[in-house]
Length: 302
Ligand code: 0GY
Image (tube, rainbow, N blue to C red):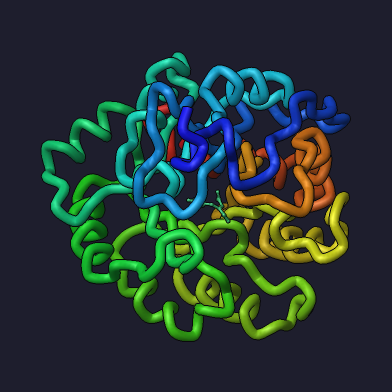
């Protein structure tokens, strides 16, 4: 295996924990991990030659074992940049999930309606636009507009990944996209600035002003200044859950690509849930009702 090529035997970041703890909190039946990934295995699903990092192999069977270990029922598998716009690993995982996974894809601007229909049959319900320079270089905004128009016709949503510091520039562009827009990882606020930091206020403003916006209360491990158990992130997530109870999603972000400081324990991430969604009703919306409405609407309650 050619390590210089950045094979999965030579990942750029820490590996995920082999034995995460068993959470004390028991998620409600039908709980969804609405942000996670599968990577490779590289020997079967090679990484993109244009990737900015090389991940660990993180195959579907390991994801599904984690789902069961944590007491979760379903996964939304999000295409990450290291696989480019080749969604084969995500589609393979969905196909092997027995109906318990759906996906968010990355596509090129010249994708045809037929190819989108194939992705839909494969379980994809959204497309992700990444604005992080360290992951994609410059975001191809013209491409994003064309893609957004195509997927809006299919009833899919757009997932946007940005850092809130960029929102002053990006906000008008993102707001002009059609359809439902899901913000990844709380819009990546600067936790050190507190709840009234400029970036987080802009995120709240988007959520307040436009009901098409949803947000994931995920990824405390990337945002925290204090580290596990991420006490400094709890007020941000809790505020979002309490202010927008019907438009929040939660996810593990397994296998946590690009984490170099430490690897989070997913059992502990699950045990954060009752700290950010403090009532059973809020937990049910966050973990079941909201993700079901977006990803399995045909099964969701009224
Ligand atoms: C995440 C976060 C990261 C990576 C990606 O697509 C990606 O490569 O999103 C990150 O490095 O912050 O959600 O997986």
